[in-house]
Image (cartoon, rainbow, N blue to C red; front, top):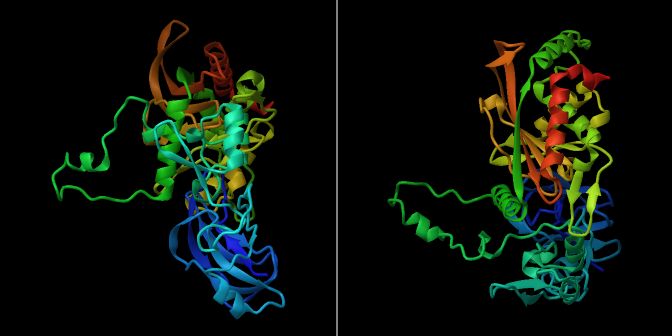
Length: 439
Protein backbone atom coordinates (compact mmCIF):
# COMPACT_ATOMS: atom_id res chain seq x y z
CA UNK A 1 0.00 0.00 0.00
CA UNK A 2 1.46 3.43 -0.91
CA UNK A 3 2.85 5.63 1.87
CA UNK A 4 2.21 9.36 2.09
CA UNK A 5 5.29 11.36 3.09
CA UNK A 6 4.07 14.43 4.96
CA UNK A 7 5.51 17.87 5.58
CA UNK A 8 6.85 17.39 9.11
CA UNK A 9 6.33 19.70 12.07
CA UNK A 10 9.90 20.25 13.22
CA UNK A 11 9.00 22.48 16.16
CA UNK A 12 5.87 23.36 18.15
CA UNK A 13 5.69 26.79 16.50
CA UNK A 14 6.10 25.56 12.93
CA UNK A 15 3.04 26.00 10.73
CA UNK A 16 4.67 26.07 7.30
CA UNK A 17 8.07 25.28 5.88
CA UNK A 18 9.99 25.65 2.65
CA UNK A 19 10.85 22.49 0.73
CA UNK A 20 14.42 23.50 -0.04
CA UNK A 21 15.76 20.44 -1.81
CA UNK A 22 14.96 16.87 -2.79
CA UNK A 23 17.90 14.53 -2.22
CA UNK A 24 16.09 11.66 -3.95
CA UNK A 25 14.32 11.72 -7.29
CA UNK A 26 11.28 9.86 -8.58
CA UNK A 27 12.10 6.20 -9.17
CA UNK A 28 14.92 6.09 -6.60
CA UNK A 29 15.01 3.26 -4.11
CA UNK A 30 14.70 4.44 -0.52
CA UNK A 31 15.70 2.70 2.70
CA UNK A 32 14.53 3.51 6.21
CA UNK A 33 16.81 6.23 7.56
CA UNK A 34 17.74 7.63 4.15
CA UNK A 35 17.70 11.44 4.00
CA UNK A 36 15.25 12.27 1.25
CA UNK A 37 14.75 16.05 1.51
CA UNK A 38 15.82 19.26 3.22
CA UNK A 39 13.20 21.46 4.88
CA UNK A 40 13.74 25.10 5.83
CA UNK A 41 11.80 26.44 8.82
CA UNK A 42 11.83 29.90 10.32
CA UNK A 43 14.85 28.93 12.45
CA UNK A 44 16.68 26.00 10.87
CA UNK A 45 17.30 23.80 7.87
CA UNK A 46 16.44 20.19 8.73
CA UNK A 47 16.79 16.85 7.01
CA UNK A 48 13.76 14.60 6.47
CA UNK A 49 14.41 10.88 6.82
CA UNK A 50 12.35 8.04 5.35
CA UNK A 51 10.91 5.61 7.89
CA UNK A 52 9.86 2.97 5.34
CA UNK A 53 11.58 1.16 2.48
CA UNK A 54 10.39 1.36 -1.09
CA UNK A 55 10.53 3.48 -4.23
CA UNK A 56 9.91 7.20 -4.39
CA UNK A 57 6.92 6.97 -6.70
CA UNK A 58 5.87 10.61 -6.98
CA UNK A 59 7.08 13.98 -5.74
CA UNK A 60 3.99 16.06 -4.98
CA UNK A 61 5.76 19.29 -3.96
CA UNK A 62 8.72 20.45 -6.10
CA UNK A 63 11.90 21.63 -4.42
CA UNK A 64 12.06 25.36 -3.90
CA UNK A 65 8.37 25.53 -2.92
CA UNK A 66 7.77 27.99 -0.07
CA UNK A 67 5.18 27.97 2.71
CA UNK A 68 4.17 24.31 2.50
CA UNK A 69 1.68 23.65 5.36
CA UNK A 70 2.60 21.11 8.01
CA UNK A 71 1.08 17.67 7.25
CA UNK A 72 0.61 18.36 3.54
CA UNK A 73 1.59 15.36 1.40
CA UNK A 74 4.92 16.15 -0.24
CA UNK A 75 5.62 12.77 -1.86
CA UNK A 76 4.33 9.22 -2.23
CA UNK A 77 6.42 6.13 -1.52
CA UNK A 78 5.61 2.77 -3.10
CA UNK A 79 6.42 -0.04 -0.67
CA UNK A 80 8.50 -3.09 -1.57
CA UNK A 81 6.76 -5.19 -4.23
CA UNK A 82 4.39 -2.40 -5.26
CA UNK A 83 4.19 -0.97 -8.75
CA UNK A 84 5.72 2.52 -8.43
CA UNK A 85 4.08 3.81 -11.60
CA UNK A 86 0.67 2.66 -10.41
CA UNK A 87 1.22 4.32 -7.04
CA UNK A 88 2.25 7.53 -8.80
CA UNK A 89 -0.83 7.57 -11.03
CA UNK A 90 -3.10 6.93 -8.06
CA UNK A 91 -1.44 9.54 -5.85
CA UNK A 92 -3.77 12.53 -6.44
CA UNK A 93 -6.92 10.59 -5.57
CA UNK A 94 -5.63 7.61 -3.60
CA UNK A 95 -5.80 7.37 0.16
CA UNK A 96 -2.59 5.61 1.16
CA UNK A 97 -1.47 5.32 4.76
CA UNK A 98 0.57 8.30 6.02
CA UNK A 99 4.25 8.05 6.86
CA UNK A 100 5.19 9.54 10.21
CA UNK A 101 8.00 11.59 8.71
CA UNK A 102 10.28 13.19 11.28
CA UNK A 103 8.07 14.58 14.06
CA UNK A 104 4.90 15.15 12.06
CA UNK A 105 1.92 15.36 14.43
CA UNK A 106 -0.49 12.43 14.58
CA UNK A 107 -4.17 13.03 14.10
CA UNK A 108 -6.62 12.22 16.85
CA UNK A 109 -9.64 11.18 14.74
CA UNK A 110 -8.68 9.16 11.64
CA UNK A 111 -10.77 9.13 8.51
CA UNK A 112 -9.96 8.81 4.84
CA UNK A 113 -9.45 12.00 2.85
CA UNK A 114 -7.91 12.94 -0.50
CA UNK A 115 -4.12 12.73 -0.28
CA UNK A 116 -3.58 16.08 -1.96
CA UNK A 117 -5.79 17.96 0.48
CA UNK A 118 -5.01 16.64 3.96
CA UNK A 119 -3.40 13.42 5.21
CA UNK A 120 -5.74 10.44 5.06
CA UNK A 121 -5.51 9.85 8.77
CA UNK A 122 -7.12 13.22 9.47
CA UNK A 123 -10.84 13.77 9.40
CA UNK A 124 -12.27 16.81 7.65
CA UNK A 125 -11.89 19.75 10.07
CA UNK A 126 -15.03 20.81 11.85
CA UNK A 127 -15.35 24.51 12.71
CA UNK A 128 -16.24 25.81 16.13
CA UNK A 129 -17.39 29.35 16.67
CA UNK A 130 -15.07 31.67 18.56
CA UNK A 131 -16.07 34.55 20.72
CA UNK A 132 -15.79 37.13 17.95
CA UNK A 133 -17.97 35.37 15.43
CA UNK A 134 -15.09 33.77 13.52
CA UNK A 135 -14.52 30.06 13.03
CA UNK A 136 -11.98 27.80 14.68
CA UNK A 137 -11.26 24.47 13.00
CA UNK A 138 -11.12 21.69 15.56
CA UNK A 139 -11.85 18.01 16.04
CA UNK A 140 -14.98 16.87 17.90
CA UNK A 141 -12.82 15.42 20.70
CA UNK A 142 -10.92 18.69 21.04
CA UNK A 143 -14.17 20.66 21.30
CA UNK A 144 -15.49 18.33 24.01
CA UNK A 145 -12.24 18.48 26.00
CA UNK A 146 -12.12 22.27 25.68
CA UNK A 147 -15.70 22.59 26.89
CA UNK A 148 -15.03 20.32 29.89
CA UNK A 149 -11.89 22.29 30.79
CA UNK A 150 -13.44 25.72 30.23
CA UNK A 151 -10.88 26.59 27.55
CA UNK A 152 -11.68 29.11 24.81
CA UNK A 153 -10.91 27.29 21.55
CA UNK A 154 -10.25 30.58 19.77
CA UNK A 155 -7.22 31.13 22.02
CA UNK A 156 -5.60 27.74 21.30
CA UNK A 157 -3.10 27.39 18.44
CA UNK A 158 -3.78 24.15 16.58
CA UNK A 159 -0.98 21.76 15.65
CA UNK A 160 -3.10 19.66 13.31
CA UNK A 161 -3.29 20.04 9.54
CA UNK A 162 -3.98 23.62 8.42
CA UNK A 163 -3.93 24.85 12.03
CA UNK A 164 -6.71 22.49 13.18
CA UNK A 165 -7.06 22.22 16.96
CA UNK A 166 -6.81 18.59 18.08
CA UNK A 167 -6.98 16.79 21.42
CA UNK A 168 -3.31 17.17 22.31
CA UNK A 169 -3.54 20.95 21.86
CA UNK A 170 -6.25 21.08 24.52
CA UNK A 171 -4.21 18.88 26.85
CA UNK A 172 -1.24 21.19 26.32
CA UNK A 173 -3.41 24.23 27.03
CA UNK A 174 -4.62 22.65 30.27
CA UNK A 175 -1.04 22.10 31.40
CA UNK A 176 0.10 25.53 30.22
CA UNK A 177 2.36 24.13 27.50
CA UNK A 178 0.34 25.29 24.51
CA UNK A 179 0.99 28.29 22.32
CA UNK A 180 -2.03 30.52 22.98
CA UNK A 181 -3.32 32.90 20.36
CA UNK A 182 -3.73 36.56 21.08
CA UNK A 183 -7.31 37.87 21.22
CA UNK A 184 -9.10 38.06 17.87
CA UNK A 185 -7.56 40.60 15.55
CA UNK A 186 -4.30 40.57 17.51
CA UNK A 187 -5.38 43.45 19.76
CA UNK A 188 -7.13 43.85 23.08
CA UNK A 189 -10.95 43.68 22.99
CA UNK A 190 -12.43 47.04 22.10
CA UNK A 191 -9.23 48.28 20.48
CA UNK A 192 -9.34 48.78 16.72
CA UNK A 193 -6.09 48.46 14.77
CA UNK A 194 -5.82 49.95 11.28
CA UNK A 195 -5.80 47.47 8.42
CA UNK A 196 -3.10 47.14 5.77
CA UNK A 197 -4.97 49.31 3.24
CA UNK A 198 -5.57 52.02 5.84
CA UNK A 199 -1.86 52.09 6.76
CA UNK A 200 -0.75 52.21 3.12
CA UNK A 201 -3.15 55.09 2.48
CA UNK A 202 -1.17 57.21 4.96
CA UNK A 203 1.84 57.22 2.63
CA UNK A 204 2.33 58.58 -0.86
CA UNK A 205 2.19 56.01 -3.66
CA UNK A 206 5.67 55.03 -4.79
CA UNK A 207 7.31 56.32 -1.60
CA UNK A 208 7.80 52.86 -0.12
CA UNK A 209 8.60 49.27 -1.04
CA UNK A 210 6.28 46.53 0.23
CA UNK A 211 8.36 43.55 1.41
CA UNK A 212 6.16 40.53 2.29
CA UNK A 213 6.75 39.02 5.73
CA UNK A 214 8.59 35.70 5.76
CA UNK A 215 7.61 32.90 8.14
CA UNK A 216 10.22 33.90 10.74
CA UNK A 217 9.00 37.48 10.98
CA UNK A 218 5.36 36.34 11.21
CA UNK A 219 6.15 33.93 14.04
CA UNK A 220 8.26 36.49 15.92
CA UNK A 221 5.48 39.07 15.61
CA UNK A 222 2.82 36.63 16.81
CA UNK A 223 4.81 35.28 19.74
CA UNK A 224 5.86 38.71 21.01
CA UNK A 225 2.32 40.03 20.72
CA UNK A 226 1.01 37.01 22.61
CA UNK A 227 3.70 37.50 25.24
CA UNK A 228 2.80 41.13 25.88
CA UNK A 229 -0.95 40.46 25.83
CA UNK A 230 -0.96 37.35 28.00
CA UNK A 231 2.03 37.77 30.36
CA UNK A 232 1.90 40.50 33.05
CA UNK A 233 5.42 41.93 32.73
CA UNK A 234 7.22 43.97 35.36
CA UNK A 235 10.81 45.19 35.27
CA UNK A 236 13.72 45.43 37.70
CA UNK A 237 16.93 47.31 36.87
CA UNK A 238 20.33 47.41 38.55
CA UNK A 239 23.88 48.51 37.78
CA UNK A 240 26.77 46.02 38.02
CA UNK A 241 30.40 46.97 38.60
CA UNK A 242 32.23 44.69 36.14
CA UNK A 243 35.78 45.87 36.77
CA UNK A 244 36.79 42.61 38.50
CA UNK A 245 35.10 40.60 35.75
CA UNK A 246 37.03 42.38 33.00
CA UNK A 247 40.32 41.80 34.81
CA UNK A 248 39.52 38.13 35.44
CA UNK A 249 38.50 37.67 31.81
CA UNK A 250 41.77 39.15 30.58
CA UNK A 251 43.83 36.91 32.86
CA UNK A 252 41.88 33.74 31.99
CA UNK A 253 42.12 34.38 28.25
CA UNK A 254 45.85 35.08 28.52
CA UNK A 255 46.39 31.72 30.24
CA UNK A 256 44.19 29.67 27.87
CA UNK A 257 46.01 26.55 26.58
CA UNK A 258 46.92 26.55 22.91
CA UNK A 259 46.11 23.93 20.29
CA UNK A 260 48.59 22.41 17.83
CA UNK A 261 48.21 25.47 15.56
CA UNK A 262 49.12 27.82 18.38
CA UNK A 263 45.58 29.18 18.77
CA UNK A 264 43.93 29.49 22.20
CA UNK A 265 41.45 26.70 22.97
CA UNK A 266 38.90 29.28 24.12
CA UNK A 267 38.35 33.03 24.38
CA UNK A 268 35.87 34.12 27.01
CA UNK A 269 33.45 36.97 26.37
CA UNK A 270 31.60 39.05 28.93
CA UNK A 271 28.44 37.26 27.77
CA UNK A 272 29.90 33.90 28.87
CA UNK A 273 30.23 35.26 32.43
CA UNK A 274 26.66 36.61 32.23
CA UNK A 275 25.30 33.17 31.21
CA UNK A 276 27.15 31.45 34.04
CA UNK A 277 26.14 34.08 36.60
CA UNK A 278 22.46 33.79 35.65
CA UNK A 279 22.63 30.00 35.81
CA UNK A 280 24.11 30.07 39.32
CA UNK A 281 21.71 32.80 40.46
CA UNK A 282 18.76 30.61 39.48
CA UNK A 283 20.23 27.77 41.52
CA UNK A 284 20.63 30.10 44.50
CA UNK A 285 17.05 31.41 44.13
CA UNK A 286 15.27 28.22 42.95
CA UNK A 287 11.77 29.67 43.37
CA UNK A 288 12.57 31.94 40.42
CA UNK A 289 13.69 29.04 38.22
CA UNK A 290 10.11 28.30 37.23
CA UNK A 291 7.57 28.12 34.43
CA UNK A 292 3.94 29.12 34.88
CA UNK A 293 1.16 26.78 33.75
CA UNK A 294 -2.54 27.13 34.51
CA UNK A 295 -2.52 23.98 36.62
CA UNK A 296 0.84 24.12 38.39
CA UNK A 297 4.19 25.84 38.72
CA UNK A 298 7.01 23.93 37.06
CA UNK A 299 10.11 24.21 39.28
CA UNK A 300 13.18 23.37 37.20
CA UNK A 301 16.13 21.47 38.64
CA UNK A 302 18.64 22.82 36.15
CA UNK A 303 19.42 26.24 34.72
CA UNK A 304 18.87 26.02 30.96
CA UNK A 305 19.80 29.46 29.65
CA UNK A 306 18.52 30.67 26.29
CA UNK A 307 20.69 33.30 24.59
CA UNK A 308 19.22 35.52 21.88
CA UNK A 309 21.26 35.42 18.66
CA UNK A 310 20.53 37.87 15.84
CA UNK A 311 20.27 36.26 12.42
CA UNK A 312 19.20 37.72 9.06
CA UNK A 313 15.50 38.62 9.28
CA UNK A 314 15.05 37.90 12.99
CA UNK A 315 16.54 36.04 15.91
CA UNK A 316 16.79 32.59 17.46
CA UNK A 317 17.46 31.59 21.07
CA UNK A 318 19.72 28.54 21.42
CA UNK A 319 19.74 27.04 24.91
CA UNK A 320 22.82 26.25 27.04
CA UNK A 321 21.57 23.20 28.99
CA UNK A 322 22.62 22.63 32.62
CA UNK A 323 24.69 25.82 32.47
CA UNK A 324 25.15 25.85 36.23
CA UNK A 325 27.48 22.86 36.02
CA UNK A 326 29.53 23.92 32.98
CA UNK A 327 32.85 25.73 33.00
CA UNK A 328 33.14 29.18 31.47
CA UNK A 329 35.27 27.76 28.66
CA UNK A 330 32.67 25.07 27.90
CA UNK A 331 29.90 27.69 27.83
CA UNK A 332 32.02 29.89 25.56
CA UNK A 333 32.76 27.16 23.02
CA UNK A 334 29.17 25.89 23.03
CA UNK A 335 27.81 29.41 22.52
CA UNK A 336 30.19 30.09 19.62
CA UNK A 337 29.07 26.85 17.94
CA UNK A 338 25.39 27.71 18.46
CA UNK A 339 25.80 31.24 17.12
CA UNK A 340 27.61 30.04 13.98
CA UNK A 341 25.03 27.35 13.22
CA UNK A 342 22.10 29.65 14.04
CA UNK A 343 23.18 32.07 11.31
CA UNK A 344 23.16 29.25 8.74
CA UNK A 345 19.92 27.76 10.13
CA UNK A 346 21.64 24.53 11.12
CA UNK A 347 20.33 24.34 14.68
CA UNK A 348 18.22 21.34 15.65
CA UNK A 349 14.84 21.97 17.36
CA UNK A 350 16.07 20.49 20.66
CA UNK A 351 18.84 23.11 20.65
CA UNK A 352 16.52 26.12 20.69
CA UNK A 353 13.30 24.87 22.33
CA UNK A 354 12.59 25.09 26.05
CA UNK A 355 14.94 26.73 28.51
CA UNK A 356 14.16 28.23 31.91
CA UNK A 357 15.12 31.84 31.20
CA UNK A 358 16.82 33.89 28.49
CA UNK A 359 19.45 36.57 28.04
CA UNK A 360 19.33 39.35 25.46
CA UNK A 361 22.58 41.31 25.21
CA UNK A 362 22.65 44.49 23.11
CA UNK A 363 25.74 45.90 24.78
CA UNK A 364 27.86 45.30 21.68
CA UNK A 365 25.65 47.82 19.86
CA UNK A 366 26.30 50.52 22.45
CA UNK A 367 22.83 50.24 24.02
CA UNK A 368 23.01 51.44 27.63
CA UNK A 369 19.85 49.76 28.93
CA UNK A 370 16.56 48.33 27.69
CA UNK A 371 13.74 45.99 28.72
CA UNK A 372 13.25 42.71 26.84
CA UNK A 373 9.99 40.90 26.13
CA UNK A 374 9.65 37.52 27.86
CA UNK A 375 9.94 34.52 25.54
CA UNK A 376 7.23 31.99 26.55
CA UNK A 377 7.32 29.62 28.38
CA UNK A 378 10.06 31.43 30.34
CA UNK A 379 9.15 33.43 33.45
CA UNK A 380 12.08 35.86 33.13
CA UNK A 381 14.48 37.39 30.63
CA UNK A 382 17.59 39.45 31.38
CA UNK A 383 18.35 42.44 29.15
CA UNK A 384 22.03 43.41 29.20
CA UNK A 385 23.39 46.82 28.23
CA UNK A 386 26.88 48.01 27.39
CA UNK A 387 29.67 48.07 29.92
CA UNK A 388 31.05 51.61 30.07
CA UNK A 389 33.10 53.92 32.26
CA UNK A 390 30.83 55.83 34.65
CA UNK A 391 31.45 57.96 37.74
CA UNK A 392 30.49 56.22 40.98
CA UNK A 393 31.08 56.90 44.65
CA UNK A 394 33.51 54.44 46.23
CA UNK A 395 34.80 54.86 49.80
CA UNK A 396 33.47 58.41 49.82
CA UNK A 397 35.23 59.41 46.61
CA UNK A 398 34.03 59.81 43.04
CA UNK A 399 35.90 57.38 40.82
CA UNK A 400 35.54 56.01 37.29
CA UNK A 401 34.26 52.44 37.19
CA UNK A 402 33.25 49.90 34.54
CA UNK A 403 29.47 49.68 34.94
CA UNK A 404 26.91 47.54 33.12
CA UNK A 405 23.15 48.06 33.45
CA UNK A 406 20.87 45.01 33.38
CA UNK A 407 17.07 44.82 33.46
CA UNK A 408 15.16 41.70 34.51
CA UNK A 409 11.69 41.28 32.96
CA UNK A 410 9.47 39.04 35.10
CA UNK A 411 6.17 37.22 34.63
CA UNK A 412 4.25 38.43 37.67
CA UNK A 413 2.16 35.25 37.70
CA UNK A 414 5.27 33.21 38.52
CA UNK A 415 7.78 35.66 39.99
CA UNK A 416 6.70 38.32 42.48
CA UNK A 417 8.57 41.58 42.97
CA UNK A 418 10.60 40.51 46.00
CA UNK A 419 11.52 37.19 44.37
CA UNK A 420 12.63 38.93 41.19
CA UNK A 421 14.71 41.34 43.27
CA UNK A 422 16.40 38.41 45.04
CA UNK A 423 17.26 36.81 41.70
CA UNK A 424 18.69 40.06 40.34
CA UNK A 425 20.70 40.59 43.55
CA UNK A 426 22.12 37.07 43.30
CA UNK A 427 23.09 37.73 39.67
CA UNK A 428 24.75 41.04 40.60
CA UNK A 429 26.74 39.37 43.38
CA UNK A 430 28.06 36.73 40.95
CA UNK A 431 28.96 39.25 38.25
CA UNK A 432 30.76 41.57 40.65
CA UNK A 433 32.76 38.73 42.21
CA UNK A 434 33.57 36.50 39.21
CA UNK A 435 35.88 34.19 41.17
CA UNK A 436 32.78 32.95 43.02
CA UNK A 437 31.63 31.41 39.73
CA UNK A 438 34.73 29.25 39.54
CA UNK A 439 34.50 27.72 43.00
